[in-house]
Length: 115
Image (cartoon, rainbow, N blue to C red):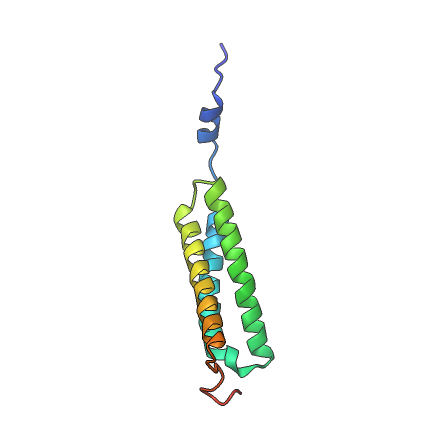
């Protein structure tokens, strides 16, 4: 006698990978760390600052996209995926506030003379 499983039982029986959620959370943490570094170095306008800001932008986009993808497709590692989304959102809010401050006429490089 052969036992058959319904599709719902098959899905529950397959162990879900947590890799996507973990990667999203790790990229969110990297985005937050690079955001901190960008606040410290971005006003220097040198190659290191450009590299930090570029890496920050890349990790923010990747954290948001991979974490959202993980939340939509997997039930595993949801906490880490939510962390990735939240930290990417913090980075996007910081970008919006910096843009508003620049539009209001605030000189971001005035604190250290621009270099």
